[in-house]
Length: 98
Ligand SMILES: [Zn+2]
Image 1 (tube, helix red, strand yellow):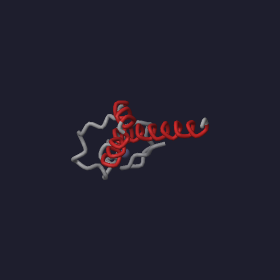
Image 2 (tube, protein in one colour):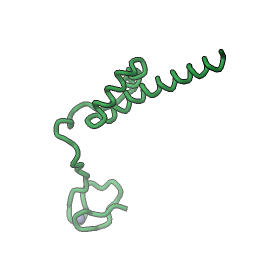
Image 3 (cartoon, rainbow, N blue to C red):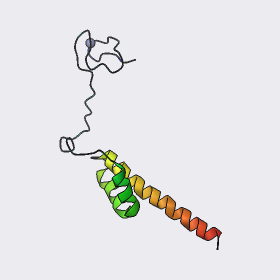
Image 4 (cartoon, rainbow, N blue to C red):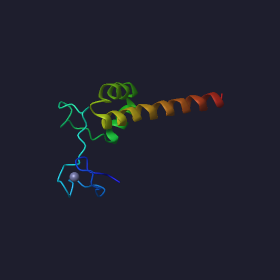
């Protein structure tokens, strides 16, 4: 149950403003830098495909963007991870059947 950060009144889930004192209830994360705001960070399966076919690029994108564009970075990193799992799986199967 959320409470007003100004006056302590109990709020409804998802209230933007306190009904009693009108204080805004939105979180303003301090770690967000102005340079990253406005940058496209929608992620998307395209980054995963890129990371899968070019795992090195996926890894680099993940390391470079994990702070500024976490969604995109995670999608690219996921692609590289899937590639690694597939690669290990293929190696394991090859070892089993030889
Ligand atoms: Zn209030």
